[in-house]
Length: 290
Ligand SMILES: [Zn+2]
Ligand SMILES: [Zn+2]
Image (tube, rainbow, N blue to C red; front, side):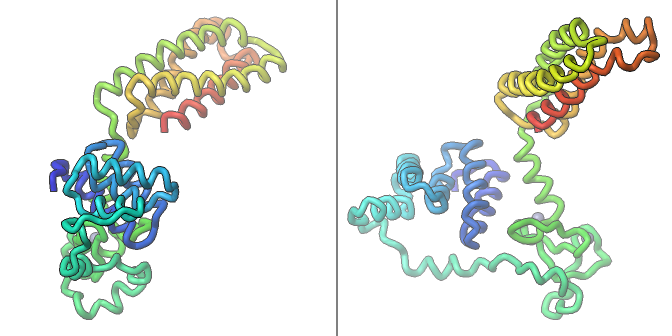
């Protein structure tokens, strides 16, 4: 196996297992995730070819797998069969190897959770890796570590340990530290511009202004999100949505501050327009960065 990154290797294993269990949509999503991060992994392309519903994409995926790894028998075989061409002798399906594949234990059934305590006869000597005083028969479907029922986290493909969940989240949240500087900086500049316009035109506005702010807020929030996300290669950060909303509030509040200091919040109606803007724009920005 030439995949160096252990996270990707674990993700690929997981994708294959999901695929084998017949959950094509879930497997497809996983394969796409791997390809997005590492487009050179032939196994992921082959896996995608097996689960995609689009015939054109299936062909393309197998072709890609074979191009990346010309001696990759399953992909060569699949592509030949798809095109109705004869399968090269070297790529014929091995008969013996099937046995080894069957050795992989099937994913733990969902019912196991309820019976974890009572039916734990054959491996009741297992103890939770986080709670050495708790016996269990549950194992993480991904890494196989024993987990007690309060540590087990239910996923669509089986019970997972907290470590594997965390690992998957780390794959999902791929933002680099510098992204936390770039995106907020861009967000702040755009928010300052938007905030200036809002303070200039929406402060003290009437009903018509509220209506406009409702509309403009959504567009502005989305625009700020789109622009900042583009700048950081569309990576996702765990705390980026919150940070971006903070920038929006900061960029708008700066312009409103003199008015608040001068008149206090005595006439709240004055700030209703900017308030609506912040609420709608913040919601749109948060949703976009998520
Ligand atoms: Zn695990
Ligand atoms: Zn536990």
